[in-house]
Length: 237
Ligand SMILES: [Zn+2]
Image (cartoon, rainbow, N blue to C red):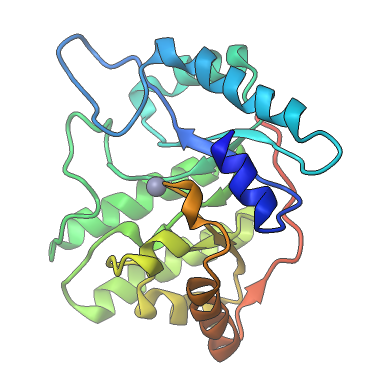
């Protein structure tokens, strides 16, 4: 409710919620950045309560930021569809199935890590279920620039052919993370991929941060990126 109020105060007309998806990991594995499956119903209730409270003033689509983990994919779809989730963002923070792979945001100069990230993201996009790709440049590759361009260029072309917009992530921009990565956004410009700007609000104060929004718009204008004016939500059914 606090997020919805802050977004309404900042003048937003639509606010999509996209908390991190829960997975039924094996006993003994703890995933620190997501709710447990048993908490999903509470999340849904909170968003629907806010939707009711802001009816007529702001739309509140109910989504999740989903990792594409092949091992858990089928049962994850069942879990979230049953819960009434309406749309997905793709956010691939780990490769493999999380338990068996390093965090994609850890620096690596190994081409195989980069290639694996791109392969998994492309496979996910081909499902046709994702509304956009969040922080596509999360992968923190510190090796050869030519290798980076080859793999990430392929990812950009695949996103474009799947019709999936790429997100300029305002949280990364505001907190000086490794993303947005300027090399990546040059590729996005070269490939003329559709682009969106995502707030990635981890606190209600994230809305109305006009200084960070201005930095994102400077990037869009300087590189002549194809910023979408509207974002159609893809059905997950
Ligand atoms: Zn994320």
